[in-house]
Amino acid sequence: MKRAALTSRLTGLLLLLAAAYPSAGLAQDTLQPYQLVRSLQLVQDRIAAGDHAAMPMQAKLLEMTDARLRAADADDFKDPRNFRALLVYGMSGGNPVTVEAAVSRAASDPRNLAIAKGVIDYLNGRPGEAIEALRPIDPMALPGDLGAFLALVKGSLLATDQPALALTLLDDARLLSPGTLVEEAALRRSVGIAVTQGDAARFALASTQYVERYLYSPYASQFADSFVSGVIALHMSISQDKLADITSMMDPEREKVIYLRIARRAAIDGMTDLSAFASTRAEQGRDGNTNQGDPRALLYSSLSTVTSDTIEDVRAKLGKIDRSKLSDGDRALLDAAQTIAGEVVAPPASPPAADPAPAPVAPSPEPEIAAASPTDAAGLPPVEGAVSEQPAVAPSLEAAAAAPSAPTPATDAATVLPASAPATSASADTTDPTDAAMTKTRRQLDLIDQMLGAAPK
Image 1 (cartoon, one colour):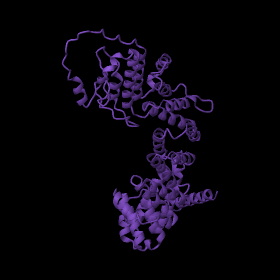
Image 2 (cartoon, helix red, strand yellow; image 1 turned 180 degrees about the horizontal axis):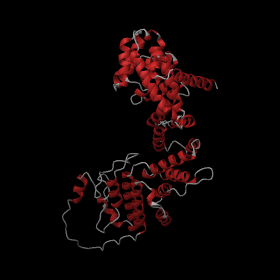
Image 3 (spheres, one colour; image 1 turned 45 degrees about the vertical axis):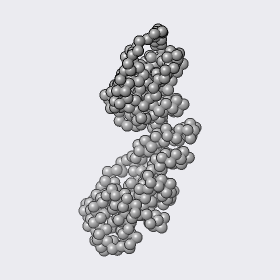
Image 4 (spheres, helix red, strand yellow; image 1 turned 30 degrees about the horizontal axis):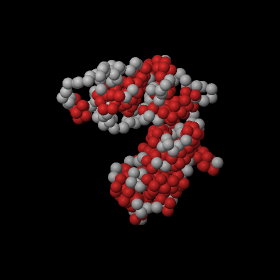
């Protein structure tokens, strides 16, 4: 309640300032830098909470603050609030040239100058120098407005090399500045770091807090990317109930999109249970509004069972999907799934007649050529792993979908599988033809799906 009252008063103050100083130049000359920066922070906090209409105001305030700081002299920076405001401005998306020029005119203590150097290095893309300059500075020993931003910057810089320390710093940033853009950014970064650490509990907690507070932030799409990737990476450690608890706090449309993305990634990566769960949740919808007509949900729910005992039902389901409502990548995926489903139910090829005295035949060099080639028979590079959430290339998708569509009796699995796939042993000749067909089909499905990594539109 106190913060809401403060926000209301500051909003009123900002409106009064705008009315009192209709000329941006007059406002820049009259207001102190710390006043402009505080107004900027207020607007950014409103944006983080979902007020997208405040974004033009942010741009205008950045412009006014930049002009005021470029005009500031040594006397202005005798007020420590103005020097702190300069550093906060830099860490709020300010102009590094302006920050560097203003620092050169300011007389401050060694600690503040060290912070200024680190901030300038950070803004100019010199992370190594920034870390060294900021390493001895404890954000918790600084005034709250400056300490929060510094903790966020240090946490971001250390995310790769010292993730545990980075998470601690991001927690400090949230503690120093709750309900602000700083907390929004700290939570968003914490989600991604928890995934790289394999920390499912931290991932679930940070995701829950983000969805509760910042789901409508303009940066929420970045959270969604990290969240989907985290669910896939940590699927063995996160229960479906916990996942449902987190998504239940989203509005129905966002929840559906999240589940569609999870279902697609899980299907591509062969996570049958997760794909089926996410597809079902995407189809069910909320508030009595189901999404059973969404072709993406129908497609993804079919992928995990495309080689199952209910293949006829799957084929019928695939046949009802409206292709015109799918992206190019998903249309190629549909083609591939239909082709493979057809191969599953096709009669197995008859084994070749036994020849008691076969004539010696020199080994064919073709398998060696295929193994050395950077592409397979479909013109695709060898698959080392699933390509996740990357833009799909239409020609490759079409080639992937067409690869198994016209098999010939002489086609060998090695011409379809990547070079790293295990070779068929000599004992395969005695394998049941139906089992062999199923094995080949599953391998083809794995290869095709791995090449289809684009997120649904």
